[in-house]
Length: 210
Image (cartoon, rainbow, N blue to C red; front, side, top):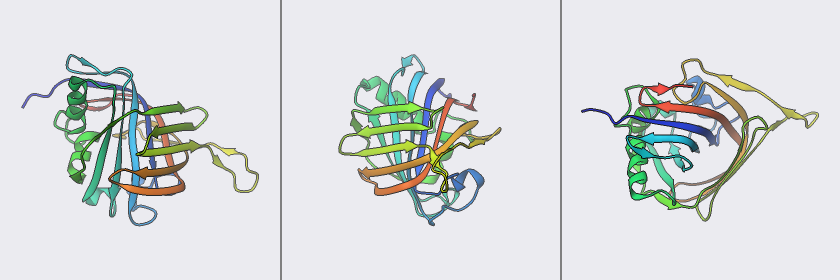
């Protein structure tokens, strides 16, 4: 079946309950055995076919009982309430993985998630500064997360580290930081001092373009 052409460029955030560095990026088990988290982006420029997606945000909260590649995950999409019906369908067309090549982010996501909770359409506030390793997402009554630099445990100074993934399906270069998360939707959890990745990304049907 022909795929619809699409492209998403924007500010990518992935926060989870694992230790700094995200074991999943290294094909290692989650720090605590299971993984709760969120991922998504504020789209600075994007489209799905003829439908423009500039300025919209989407995030997905997730729960995995073990390593991600073992599957059995749960997910709940959170979509910017400003999205029109056409834009909502466009975002679902991307998130479904049906318009992506095998081995790309959204295709993999479709294979490892076995329970998809009903989506939430709500206002999404996003603050994002990759260079400073600072971010904040607020979805009233549903999700709140803050990102700050990792602190040196001895001096208290900001610690900076990047993860470079030349063949990554999520991003190429990510700034690693610390996150606090409070999720009160279908997937409920709370954590302090967990992992965060901040990155500028370009996703296409064939994978990461930048």
